[in-house]
Image (cartoon, rainbow, N blue to C red; front, side, top):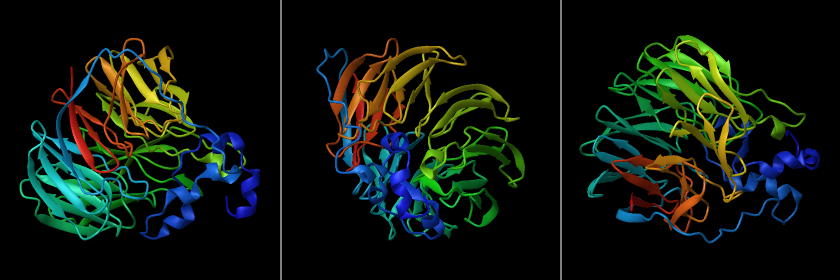
Length: 405
């Protein structure tokens, strides 16, 4: 998609299902953020919605989500397409907003422990571990704060924006930048230790998955070119690489195959999903593919009840029997509602939508069993499930902990 006069030739099928946060790789050379709405492929075909969201239907509630506590975290996701997601570390929950606010809460009571305001807008995070909290800024800096006080420990510039959560093993802090670099910083002072980079495609989704660090010292990261790469955490030496998706089609929009969903470590496996590609499970030590299924998703995979759960690019939630091709059930009641990544809690899978409704779906047969509205501005950040609670961070900055009843 190099010139505007090619837009009319773009595959209508691809544009109809394309998310509203596609950006051109040529724009990513600097540190600026971009209003993804202005690059929404839906607008290329007129004012009518290509895929209107499915209207919610009445149902008989079988379970309630009771509000345990709530808090406000700045302006939430802000005006651009951010996916700032809170993180749990021990008994504390850390959250950040686009306006630079970083907060620490008691995970069980919601009590505010500290709040700090950075000078720069936040676009990536939150990461936490080994006594530190990490965010990425619009000015292409990685910032480390003290978990106990919120005091600045260090701030270090990187090559471009960080749109996902930094990860640490206590030795290095690993970040993934939008110019397709994987960068390791010293956890103690932020000094750069190594860099690994790949080729940036012509067109990509705004965002990136967060790298994961395995118990045996490997960093695994998914890139916009559809590859999953493992390198050694201490020195960045390449270990293995495998394709989760292969670009197909004549036009750039058809060839978008980003791995943007969160990677899932499951014992000796790492599970990944790609847009217009596949779901795959790979051996963390060798990169050998141990399971695969054709599907298009820009969210991560969840597991529970012996199933793997994923939301495809149309908002259909599917349960597959783990390590097989067997579809247990599908739920299309939320189609085209910009459904979030699935999160298992109790006997249910929770997903949220663009109107801020959180839906509880039975892990057994896929029917909707409960619903609550968490934020009228919508919810797109991944939810968290721990301590018997479901943590929901709305787009406006509302952070709420719910308990099943």
